Image 1 (cartoon, rainbow, N blue to C red):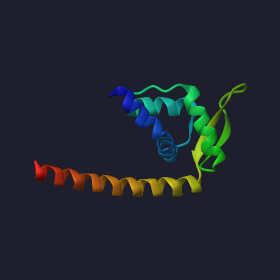
Image 2 (image 1 turned 120 degrees about the vertical axis):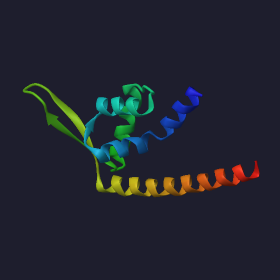
Image 3 (image 1 turned 180 degrees about the vertical axis):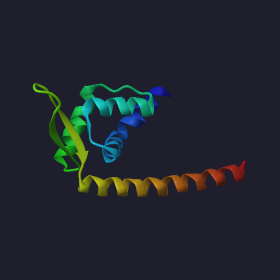
Length: 112
């Protein structure tokens, strides 16, 4: 079950990242931490950074450098307008899907 759940979450990672970055700009490690808090599943940095690069290349997020000390800076990511449109479309689709799923469950309960 846990393996299936991890695969399901992995398939939703693009959407989860967009949603997290919609809430506030974050760096890669912070995104990993939030995903673990939300799902209970730990992903490696090797799985998150390729997704961040892909989303940035698609124009859905934008990365920028922030200086945190004299010698250190971090790369933050934020969702773009295009990313917000995509996230809105995904949200609408998921709402319809879960509405249909609830209807299906009601029908199924009536048949039992």
